[in-house]
Image (cartoon, helix red, strand yellow):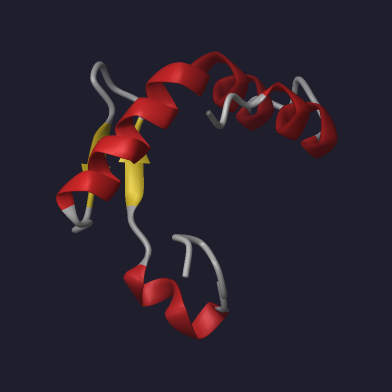
Length: 69
């Protein structure tokens, strides 16, 4: 299973939040390697994530711009 697979409302109790600070801060508990990947992802994609949050692009545009490698 990949992190994020099988997302359902009844499983949101397992969700975490990420503060867009420098460096990003995970608010919740994740396995160490997963937390490192989340922080790297946010650092790499911060401009795109903020642009999407601020309504500057569509979901499709955001997904096309995200660096997932």
